[in-house]
Amino acid sequence: GVTYPLVVATWPFKEAVRAAWRSANEKASSAVDAVIDGCSACEELRCDGTVGPGGSPDENGETTLDALIMNGTTMEVGAVAGMRFVKDGIKAAKLVMDHTDHTLLVGEMASVFAISMGLSGPTNLSSSESIKKWTNWKQNHCQPNFRKNVFPEIGCGPYHVRDEKFNLCGEADARNCFEALELQSNVVGRHNHDTISMAVIDKWGHIAVGTSTNGATFKIPGRVGDGPIAGSSAYADDEVGACGATGDGDVMMRFLPCYQVVESMRQGMDPQRAASDALSRIARKFPNFVGAVVAVNRNGVHAGACHGWTFQYSIMNSTLDDVEIITVVS
Ligand code: SD4
Image (tube, rainbow, N blue to C red; front, top):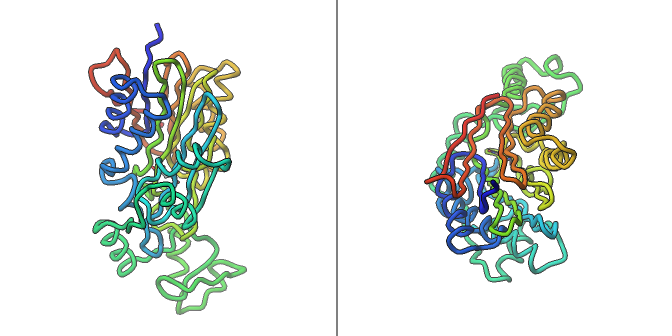
């Protein structure tokens, strides 16, 4: 039989799933409120030192947050992208959903809105770890992550566009050019598990999803990933089910994999096939991308799929004593 409530989330973020479960089960919260409680716990605890403030510094050493909340009953969405100076990403997203006619606010302006609505700030989003990570990268490696067809003269730049890649580089900077070419193809391993995407089906069978992330390490300032994009990092529809995604957001957001998963389930695919199909569409064009999705239908049947890495997701419902971790291999 169908057992509600139910919580699923990307990665073995047990404390976050427990928080959402307590909210949905003991407090009988709505699906939206349980997602907020779960993702907020993840941000506060920094889920294994990854999600939320204090993680993933950009090229300038700053941490910014992307977050999304979606109500699968009303299809309302609220999101923030590249948000600075406010620690509560998912709560800011909910304020956008509940108190504006908009869907997505960005950058400093998202922070101004969040603070005007009562969230605390402005706060520095760096941690000693993120500063250390960035300082080390800047001083010792300073690799041109996320850049292509441009080459730094020395170390960190400035970057120059060349019409012919290696051949037109002068002798002096040939080594840098070569390293840049090498690095450009080195996509696997550039992500930590720094994204939570969570779905909750509440006691009444209503579904909500949410995502919270600090994006990609050493991203170009201004970069927004799949996190705040409905249909990409997460999607929910009470009539069908829900999906959450993690991985190489720069590629995944071109395919709206979670929209794909939910629509495939609507057409009759089971969660496993829907999840695998959504990723194989991406892999056909970008065989080196790394990513994963977790899918759940409105009957509580769940499945995961991944490409280029081993994926784990968490599940909790009343048939389990505690959060269960499921490992998916590509
Ligand atoms: C992003 N999708 O911003 C996120 C990163 C991620 O586990 O999922 N990391 O691209």
